[in-house]
Image 1 (cartoon, rainbow, N blue to C red):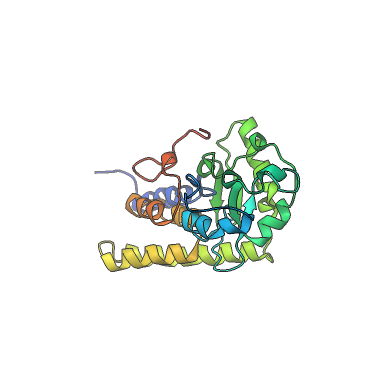
Image 2 (image 1 turned 90 degrees about the horizontal axis):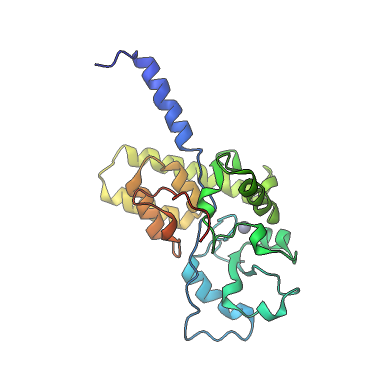
Length: 245
Ligand SMILES: [Zn+2]
């Protein structure tokens, strides 16, 4: 029998939960795959339906769900790299906020982490307060992660901003869903409606963070959000340590 008093045990458990929900969770890594054979890109907007199908209708940076006003995002800006304007490999999806802050900054991709090539799941910490660079990174990766947040202004989300309001709202939905599920852990209908709600809400990383204690749900989220790059996850839905291909 454990000699630890009940209240202390509870505190230790509570601390574990807090740590669980604040560690190493991040921008959803995605797999774009090959350009669909039937897709002919004569203007970049042509790629939007196929990109939406591959990635789901989520901003590749802030993870906000968008039924409308989702744009084809050029990783290398088309104004500086016209040769990449119609290249499938140069596309992500983005919301108007991330898109306009990133703008046409000319970038060296190796100075940043990108969700289509790096394990962006392992470089940030999510908490209800917002997104921060994970303190588990070495100084070089830490600087790169910070630059990644700055690129789309995710380092300075404030409480009046649409992206942060959405983030907070979805966090609360995920918390309520976890409570509901924990009261009915084997109820298949509740499991399935939780997955539907997560897909509808967006913010994969929030769901993965809030359900950090539940490997079964994490595996389901990874499978349910289209285009999630599975190679970065282990069988329990945790991030693998490597950061780049
Ligand atoms: Zn965004």
